[in-house]
Image (cartoon, rainbow, N blue to C red):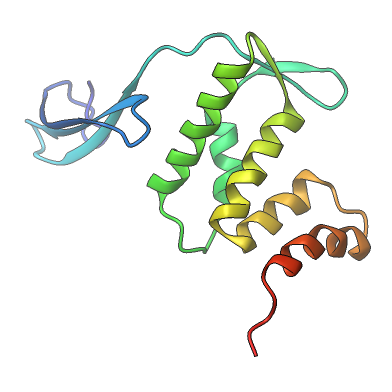
Length: 155
């Protein structure tokens, strides 16, 4: 493994453990050249999954694209990168367990919204705003009504 700092291929594994979801191995490494430490993840090779977009276009599933969308929704929120990775692993587990070779983008969006609704209301609303393509404030209010009903304001 090449060091991300000095790009020399000379490291050692300091610690190795299964991730929370059990679907990957987290390895803590130390570069023997520059002495800096970094983390790598090892996971089983993913099957060739395609995402069916809105107009029936198909594109390869991208973990990074999913991560980017969730990270944007969680921007400046008290949500760690590890928590985002756990959400992604959970979504991937559900997708790989329920779909063979293709999944609709709306199903991925539904799964993201389900996780964000439990995690952080602001991140949920940010994601829903883009995912549901709100046309006006009424669409926004309609999405918030169920959430407001569950969490009445504090006196």
